[in-house]
Image (tube, rainbow, N blue to C red; front, side, top):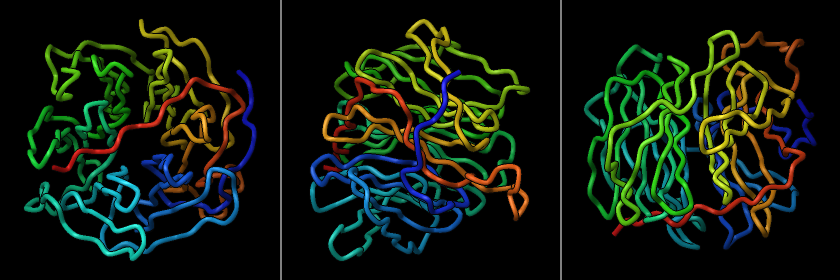
Length: 291
């Protein structure tokens, strides 16, 4: 198991999640779900800008160079980058105050998969929804903590997880729409003693890079589900990776302080966002198609 390279952002998030690159602006955006912040930092470093949010949001995607889409506790919002103004685009489980959004990714077609879950991780309240050009469909229900949503570069398959049961599934998808075209199959099962699968990305070679919550590790899986690499991380509760840099060849990973002792003396880097010491053939997510 190789070690980690450095700290991308030293700010400690309560629940850092949902990192996504905006290659046109050369910036990484990510969320502190429980802190109600959108975080922003250039690929090249510098200061991190915190934007206060009126709702708990968990994932971010680019629409264009002027607009972001945020997945939040009551729906999908468009956020003007320059002014910070937010507008509700589509309500999602707005009639269920006990749930919030969680992990999400954009399919190569421009469709979005977004997970929802109970605010206290209540068993079976989670689901994964599909959004594309204004339409919403529910794809999977009965989950508890939906995570690890990621897509292959050709759009032909997806992975997703339920952290509560330690399982990542793989399912075929329509490259044109991002909708499932078959039944899900078990891809990876992680024993509870080793942690739980959290967020994931898939690189251009088809490797699935998964943050292992509770395991202080970023793991890489081959397309057949074989774990081919594990990189030790300096925080136990790592949450989600993303590709950054002009060539998308650098991995960053968010983390969380949620549930830890206030002094975190045994996990002093908890909540930070880290860079990873491997060069990868990453790729940027496409813009989400809102219309």
